[in-house]
Image 1 (cartoon, one colour):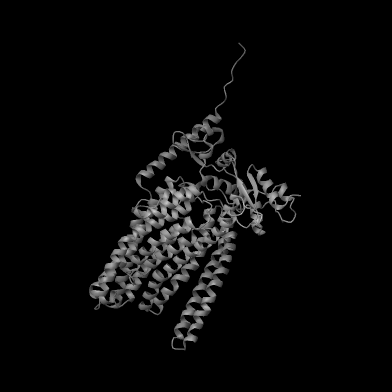
Image 2 (cartoon, one colour; image 1 turned 90 degrees about the horizontal axis):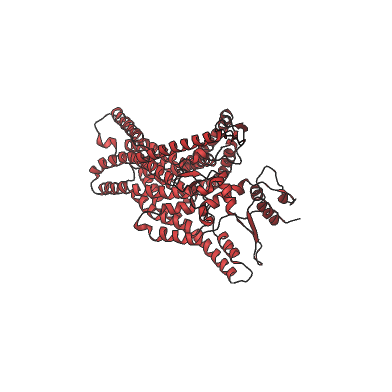
Length: 605
């Protein structure tokens, strides 16, 4: 009877993959190196409808039977990029069921319907799974990204080619966001200077700056939408969501697709709505609970302000214990709720999870600011908190974000150096151990969350801290390089993920942008240097009417900007329409050829 590693290797080989067992004599871990032959990749590419370039330059879904028509297929080592190879391999491994060889290992509770890798993860038998870094490609990317990009734009295409669309979109968005911060940073610095030298003029300046920021947010988001569309087309991922395969975990009744004739799983909308009727109230209740606990802590802290300092620390200490425990419990709850919702695609699943998790993080980051602004109406406290969050906290967390994985990598390199000095460890084992010692790059979620929350700081409270865009700009210049270094210099190579845009993060940014109108109008109405200072002889009703009119006008302008700025450049729209026309013609020709009767030849003469 084979042991577990041999049984897994036999199952992989039976599916057409190359699997070799490797280990070092002085190590307890066993490595299973997996590769794929060229024709296996070709068949997997056909099954995945991977688009490749024909010899005439047109992109078509790869078909093995017409492989000679695709540019570079004869050059076996170069036709599929390393990113494509990794994606095809991972997709196959995630769906591979345990075969008869694996089933012979009775110590593992195999399920015939659960993929082999999922079972190994569930039973904690798989320590890690990751693709190797391509040392030459990584060195070239590091040189272009970390050394030279200060003089020009980031090498976004190279980032996409090595890491995939999800990570490339994040860095492209962060670059665009940072570039768009330059104007509000300069204007905010001028307004801040006025508050220090000419307070009377600063009153007008703050109003103009707050209105500018609310409209700037919409212009930035619409500009990003256009650039995102160009990048998606350039990377050939603009139709990814329309053709995205269903998750293995997706359940539903099998129905026949009337267009393709294929059997697909279908989950009725009524059943999904019934599940949402459970998950949405539970999520909202959890968020409200977090808000109430935070407000209670703040109220207790204010009530004990005159007490001994040790007594004043009690609410803060209790809340400090509550937050990590609640976040941990809520994350587990969010996974359960998200699984229960039965999302069809990975994109839908991730977007729903992001909304659930980001909602609580928004509470953690924004409620204290709203409390200072609108409950106790202490603008000095609000300004101090904002400055701390934008300056001290981001620098501190950014430093830890880089130093922690860097220290882990140094230890991994030291361990690898010991292996290289030993005759017991083959080179591939040493490389595997070195990269295994690096921290995994889990996802772009934390990086996006940090920047989206920052976007909220500078837009929601523009009327209080005009310097916020300048502080954010300075932070982001460093953040781009820190995130790039963390990814290139200290992390394992993540599995490339295909996406067509930044997903639901754009929606969250839009919510913050719309909310900025309400918060800034309210701040202008409540502050001493706001509307009351400019209209001292007006009645409260007239001042309130002016605020409501300003809020309506700003929302109307934001709406007009969003509908008048096209989502795609005109040239891109024309190219996509032409591409769709060619695809329809290609499909019609193929259907006509398939239905055309084969002529019968008379050989009787």
